[in-house]
Length: 150
Image (cartoon, rainbow, N blue to C red):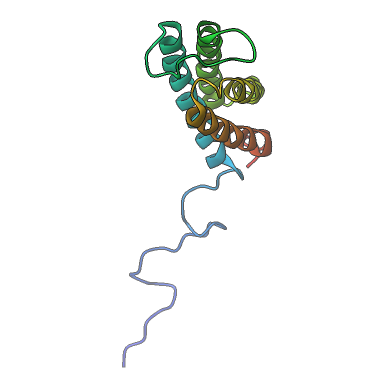
């Protein structure tokens, strides 16, 4: 009769990690920050494209729309500038800076206001940008300060 010594085993050694041997733990909301950074960059690119289109008086905007402030060309320049600053904010968010977090929140707020004020030019697009900006604000405000604490 053979006996097996319990201390000598041919099985793979067990990991003694408190996290079950899986990937290292992430801070709560780390995925929200990545998601918010991607959304900020997405909205930035789209704002730049639509800003350039509005400056060039592209034909896909509503004809003879009345704006609260300014005209289509003015809103094109405003949208273009917001988009460029949003691209910088997305880069800063990905680098982990608090400056990028607050800049992202501020630019999403400005983008929300700009989207609502430009509803006469492109209503469905403005509401879509508004919804995405709300997700950005939530992700950065709720989880932006916790990404460094693991």
